[in-house]
Length: 486
Image (cartoon, rainbow, N blue to C red; front, side, top):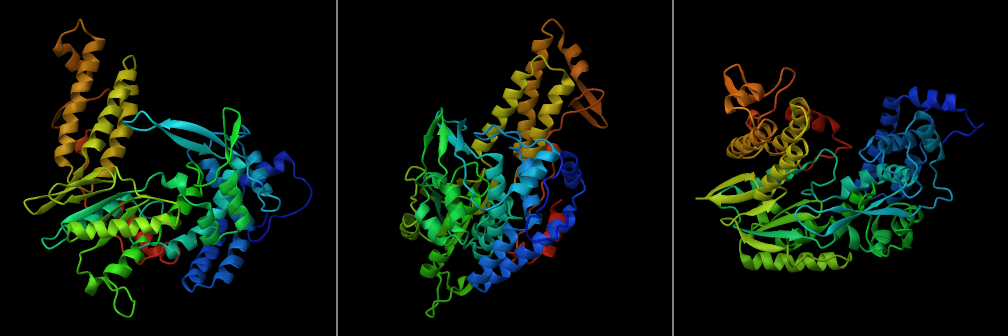
């Protein structure tokens, strides 16, 4: 099949063998380049506010066979690839994936209800609702997300970092640090939290303001969900679990930065010039539905809170009174798993207590579950947890935290080893499970593998992101930045 065709090819129904061959021999590189070109054109049309051209290019992309194949691949490769919707169908082989790609079409499309499950919230008794679409509906969402993402990137707030291509929590952390680190920086912070963001977004606002095929968007929003064999309609919100949901939520919240800018650093002509007119020291940083706003005084922070509340009300949203608070920098605040606080005038960013407690609880649960495991199996489970957590926190002041966690995990492992050999001496236990490697002693290891220490990870400052760069127009910049980070 020729990937440059803009629409799904027609013809005789293919056999399973031919479908398998088509999937395995498909040229993914050419398909990705074709989709990238269309996304680049959509981005340029959006920046020029040529919405008719945007609509035509989106139609071209969503009917492109290349895009349909990539959407199918996205769904069949992500973490939920083995989680079925209400129809119980998953795509496990090349034949089903190829058939699915061919069947993706907006003609007579009707989304099926989502399968509702509830998952635990850390540290809380209440559970979080998760809605799982069918594989076909996920692929349709992935396909239309490919067309909507360039628009979202071109219209997004510059200091929004969540669920965006080539942006991360580390970028948000570095931007927050830059806004607060100097002696003359803002002293007050508004910590914002939106109540039930995904569940309460107004469908009317989305249908009126999101530049996407209204019939398809309506199907995504109005599909409803099924729980205990009962169907429930959805009157508001975007389902947590849908591929396109983070994109829709981001576009709903985009504009907060501009609304703040028009009030606090706009010139008389209406042009926003933060460099010369930011007398109130107002800076905005958002990751998904969590955000912070800096201010020169508590009164300014209260004004900003009211402004954001008015902005959200139009979209069916509101701030959580319990979680939204105004804090002085000397008292510190938590944001994205880090604690930001000034000590004697110096801003220190380190892992938050909640984040530390969470990783300790996770490691303790693994060790308790692995009381009968071999040492190799236990190390195999613990190393990814340690590596992931340290890589997340290695860009801030984490050295002391890493050393303390090494001691905590050592105590857990010592209890694990003593329980297994309660009739053996301490010397025997040490010689069996802890060994010397090079100049280091007390390494929890076996012949085949050894446990990573938290302190093995070196602290490395994250490079500040250039906020005016677009991933669909400045791919070279992001590729260079990716190499620097890795």
